[in-house]
Length: 102
Image 1 (cartoon, rainbow, N blue to C red):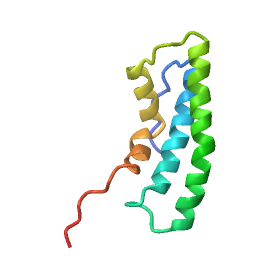
Image 2 (cartoon, one colour; image 1 turned 135 degrees about the vertical axis):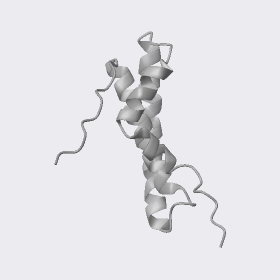
Image 3 (cartoon, rainbow, N blue to C red; image 1 turned 135 degrees about the horizontal axis):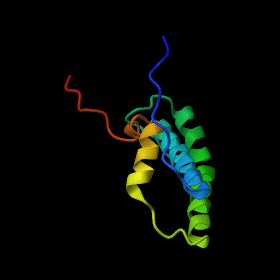
């Protein structure tokens, strides 16, 4: 049995697609660094080192959009794209887990 088909991505400019990809790269790295989610310092260290490059690429994607005259972010459209790309699960790794009382 095949998994259910994902909804299509909304129409994005190439720059918006790059922004979404770079944003999710940063989110994934922050999830790996999150001390409330991570038990391995080496894994967190490697993610923190990669975060510098990923943040620069995110900055470059936003700067390119601005230079091209794309000065507005269309939040509803970008949010739909993030949901299709599993953004809710990926961003949840950055948050604190629910409080566990022992």
